[in-house]
Amino acid sequence: QVQLVEAGGGSVQAGGSLRLSCAASRHDYSSYHWVWFRQAPEKEREGVAGIDDAGRTNYADSVKGRFTVSQDNAKKILYLQMNSLKPEDTAMYYCAARYPVGSARLATPSLRQSDYTYWGQGTQVTVSS
Image (cartoon, rainbow, N blue to C red; front, side):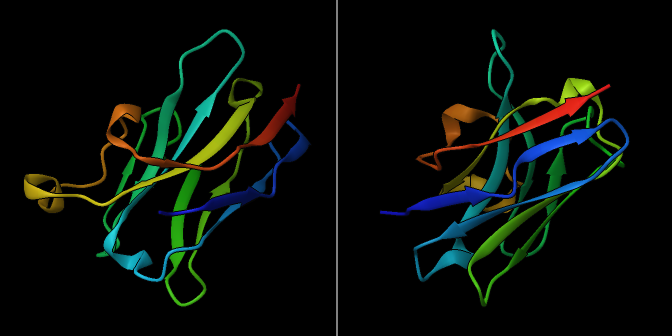
């Protein structure tokens, strides 16, 4: 079982920055795929950015060049640095994890929510214009 706790959400004006963090409880943190998702009101949850234990990343087109996902394996913390925020980035942000098996271990982290087993409770990000 993996417990995930997000922090760092808040309100910011367009063009501003926020850094989200996700603390993981499991000791073999580095074996997993870790992804940030977000869900805006009345919209489906979408994958934003993911990272694996080799440091390979995967980003949604909507955030490329603005968001950076990273991890601190020693502290078991996942980060999402969000720069140049836009009002359309307003959403509840969730971190998620899975232990990849088979061919998934060779691929960059999937951004499909159905692939992920463990979820945090979410942290709200609000960007005003």
